Length: 457
Image 1: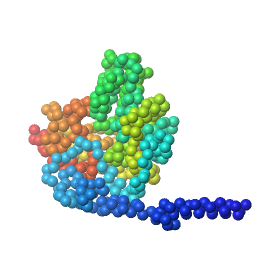
Image 2: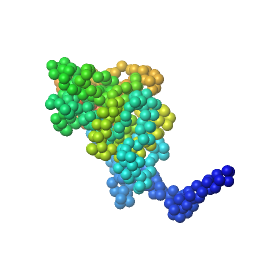
Image 3: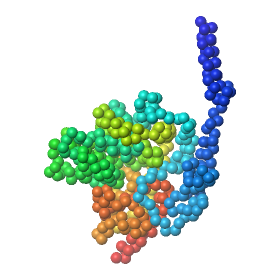
Image 4: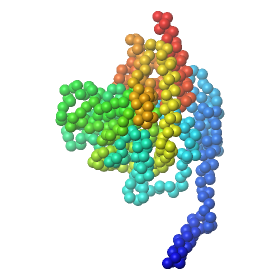
């Protein structure tokens, strides 16, 4: 009996040796050298300092010519990005979440991904028609369990090219297709302008954007016949407040946008337990360029409709993107999120402290105020630290806050874009440290000057 077992074991080992011999240049030693060139290229790009005010990338312009050029941050120039441009206009419009870049620089080894040329060449995973990585789905469920921000039990998970594609898929799945009257899309003012932009762009006969949910609730058109889809954004973009649905009734369906419901920006006050919730890698890890998001869906019929939409529009999310997302989220959950969430929250908290100090110098402007709440993740009462400053120009004559800031060389986003008044402007606080430093430098000049003018009056 023992003799037979030894023969079987020996046969298995011998087969492995022959397989390795064939695959690895007819040798009996596994020598994984094919990663060397890729590693050297990545290390070479990472080693270029760019004076700390830019980055060199493996796919940067000029790399094919043998150069390792720097791509400079805004307001910096020169071969190594060492020259700061004077009175450079500040971009506080974009929501690029580069505030997490220093964390990922520290985690370069753990977060790195190397792919062979034959990695996931198929349309699907495992040849079973699947567009979703099973391992990535598991790590996403673990992530929500660690943070405590969403229930994943009895939920389907579907991937999309960011929350942007998932939003379109959600609206498509929930819209009435068998009625002469289109579904109405509503949300709370101030709202993320993409909701309106998508509805207008697709110009569907099955959907019409109606704007403010509260206004719809008060209107005569609010009945028990017309189907309404309410998008609930929590924390809200642009003002960072936790939101609940405004409408109720049998004709109302909900899409909950939880892109910003992470410990960086908001206390985690409860586990979201909704029928349809959207999340985005861009606000989870900062990797906006990877274009990855996911939805937690309770109803199978809605999930199937969303799956068809994703399949027909893009054949699923890039397998390369899914691999990168898997590696990034493995780093996040590795220590229960402790390192990245403490780093991110600490960074944004310091930025808010600096911002509040500057705006306290003048009564001409005001910032949104949100009462602190208990955070189940950090296990303490904490302040809200939203991604954006929702600034109001208080003087009666300051009717267009966006233009007032733009004249001071600070470009934000106009309040009317969010369905609100032009008396508001949104300023981004989650861009790179260089961007934030430039914003603060300009704000100090602008706000202090405004305060002097007010005092003199």
